[in-house]
Amino acid sequence: MRKREIECASAKDELVRINEFIDKPLLLIGGLAVQQYELSRNSRDIDLICDFPKILDILRELYPSKEWVIIDKNHNEYRPNYHISHRHEQKAEIIFGPKVSERGGYKLINWDAMERDARPFQHNGKILKNILIPSPHALAYAKLVSFIDRMERSQQKAKQDLIDFCSLTNHVDFNLAEFWNIFKSYDKDSLLAEEFRNKSKEFNAIIQGSCLYDISKFFHGSEYITLEQLGELEGSLPDLVRVMIVADKIEKPEGTLGKAVESNFSKNVEYLFLISSSMAPSEKGKYYKLFEAYHQINNPEANLLDIKALPFEWDNYPIIFYQFKDNEKFAIVAFRGSDLKKGITKLYERIPAEYAHTIAKSLLADAPKDVTQTGTFERGHFEDGENINLDESIERKSVQ
Image: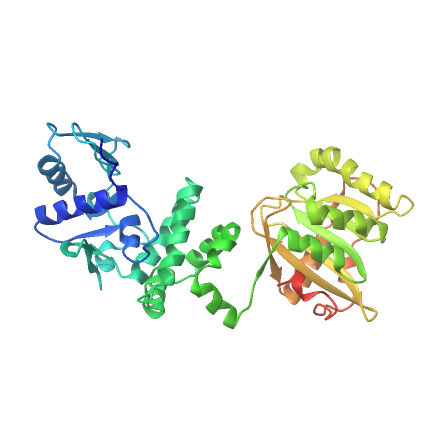
């Protein structure tokens, strides 16, 4: 029995057959297209853009039922996913998942525009003139859109899309200006950019593999810190007076953040939680005792903990405010979490100082209601003093 064929090579051999059969060029996207630019990318999926009659022609002529078994795993003519295996020979299974043009136009991708600057596919020294792959910048844009779309359905596939995107941005033929032109033609209001930022936050290590990430730091610097870094910051801020957490609910702090909370109670640092009104009753029962235990163990004599209910639902990102003294003046620094309706998230984004101060004043002005009846905090605590930038004495490594 001979060795099983390399699936990627087998898929490319099928592209040679399709190239010779069709009479006009078709656009190839997906992993095989990316592999033309990133050799370490492995794929056996044949993702061609074509109309349904052409799909049937390819299946009928190249994969006759006497020799091949064809199963559509999706059972959907508009989104087919054909798995094709040979009846008699030990060949790698062929995955043929064409994008059917009859589905209509895509909101964020125009396949005709993707053919601009497209180049022929190459395999074993052959130039396949009827199989075209988009330019690296056009294909990178398609992968970005695919990543956003897939995050809700398949995080693993979305992760691969993001890896493909980063690899394509690093290719020698990637044109940043062309990529930006494509991107802005669909994202005039910057909504797509915001969605990409939000959904890619938890894959920050992947994003850092793109040259674009290093270029962005030339203008803005690093924007996000991890939960572990936030814990280090919370435990090392000099002269920290109080911490205010605004979130839909409360979650147990662990790791460096949990240690910081315990340590801060012993230093007389006050903690105020502002949570969604509907979550207040359950959060009081679940988490007040937990934080009170931290409090009692580390500083039982001081009154340092308060949990209040906002007069509305907090459907936004969690925000943590730190207020500390700097040369007898109050300063505020704040971080916004990366996930909606959470208590604690994996990544945090620094909020500009003026914006943070305005948010804090607005939230406390809405008169949140007591949940614990401790009466530790009063309205206006975060309004006192001047709003200034972080002191130079804060360790730089915590906010990089």
